[in-house]
Structures are given as C-alpha cells and as structure tokens.
Image 1: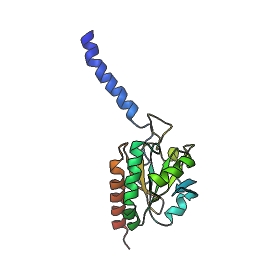
Image 2: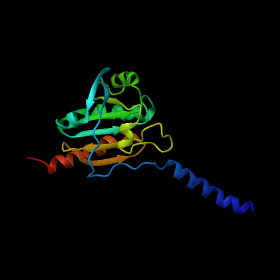
Image 3: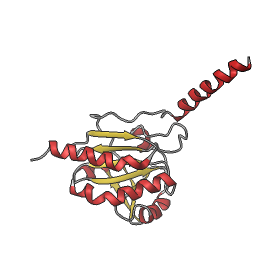
Image 4: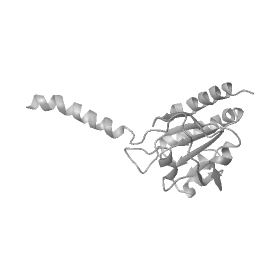
Length: 185
C-alpha cells in the first residue's frame, strides 16, 4: 500500500497543482472585437478618464493586465513597458495597464514604476478584467498577466498570457511591427 501511495500521490498532487495554476478564463481570441471601456486612469500621478474608443482613434493600443501594483513581477513589467515606450510611439501605438488596484495606489505606481510614461487604469470591480477574460484563476481577485494588441478598428490582433513578465513587451512590439508592415499606406 505504501508503494501505491508513493507512486500515485506525487502524480495526483502534480495534476491538482496544474489544475490550480491553469487560468479559469482564457484570453479573448485574435480577431475578436475588443470590449470598449471607460475608466479612471493615472498618468504621472494625475487622474483622468481613459476611453479605449478615444485611444484607438490615435492608433493601435497595447492593453495589458497585471495582478497588482508594486509586486515584483508587476514592477518589472511596468519598468519594461516604460523603457520601451519610445518604440511603441514609433509604431503609432499607446500603452495602458489595468489592475484591480484603486486609483490612489495607481497614482503612486504611475509615477514610480511606470515612470510617468504611460497610464495605468483602475478596475476595482473587475468589469474590464472580466470582459477581457483576464482573471487569475488561482487568485480571482487579481488579473492574470495578459497582454492584448488592439488595432485602431477595435480588433484584437494579438494576445499573450504568461505570469512571467519578461516577454510581454517583446511580444507586443513584434505583433505591432507585423501589423504595421501589413498596413503600410
């Protein structure tokens, strides 16, 4: 009996752990229409009303969801986006980060970690996260780390979900470059 549990228990625990780590919601598919939203956001510690519709009039939007301001992975990701903002601007794109954090916390995060280079939006009731299927299954009070690239027409042209922050900037820039090459005038 001990041999049976020695063999079965690790497999069972492994499957259980894998099922907990898997997202309860999958990201929206490429080709889907991006859900529109208006919310409070902060840029450089100043609150304003962010509208996805208005942002799309200026060009593609990189919309990224992150679990919580001031956590290790989210700070790394914010620094990466801030460091690359010139590359996004060169492609005509804007960036917006979204989390469940309240606007007061995001005022601080937008200055210290986003370096006043791009806005972060408050989604305390998770309506935006839910509409984008970006809820973290293991801790549903948080967003999953999911990035979307949305065309000016409001179509999702790229999606990427990974709790590790290191590929989100690289991957969204690659998707924008590809889209830009396909849409040269």
